[in-house]
Image 1 (cartoon, one colour):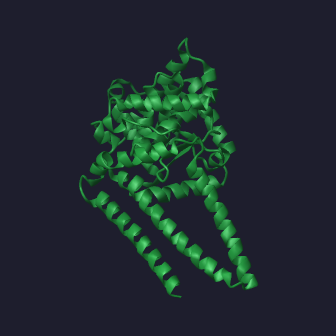
Image 2 (cartoon, rainbow, N blue to C red):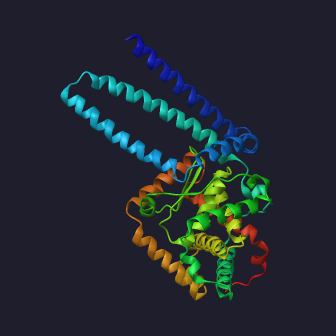
Length: 371
């Protein structure tokens, strides 16, 4: 009995320590001016690099393995617990008690790791502030102009004599991973917070599951891994990897990571990356325009897009309809809750990226005529 009490006491002490430390760091990041930025610049890089280098030694995703092991252990423990309860075995109570303690300690430890590896960085200076971009709220006119500018840039890219449409079906993952790291390092030469070591991007083995959930990529702050879905349309992957690598550099907000991925892809010497970045930028902008403008105004803009761009947008839309399952809405809701828990505006956080794009293209937007 004494040993059991001591075990529970240790569990309570360890869990309480983890949760209290997590709460302290999160409260400091939200309410202490400058703490998150100081942490992101001085503490996080050392932590992320050491963990990143360790897990990058292997090609498989430890984050994916961890999820699979958790599911297997959860099912096995549940079945064992039910069996021992039905058979009234004395060992059942000890097993359930031990399992409960392990689960409490594991969850508490993971909460602390997440706080140190991700949670604090949600409150660092945004990339717009870091790059001194004059970010303003999007207007309907600016959304229309930006949509047309990005569409025209995509069309110009594909009309170049050196363009090869077979690039859009390229599934050479080793090449794409290497080019993504190169693109991010090139961006790091301009912005110090993006410089330095980058982890090896990793394709998820069960990518079809991610496709069904409507997920292109996911960053694991627990293992510092940039995971991507290898089953999506190939030309979407370059931008996705850059997006997850931006998270690795501590830019946890979705709009920040999205904008960084856009700039890195657009500035890449690879035309595949340029296409991937601008295509994603156009999709985000059109989605913002669709929610801002009426159906008639949106359709007027859509009909004025170059035909190749329209065909590609229709193709991706049909692909997503065919591949995503009813569980995608659950995944979207879970992501919404996750973002709000980190003081973000739910899935609307992705819309802030469009404001950054408008700031980036401010000069061309001002010069461009409306339809």
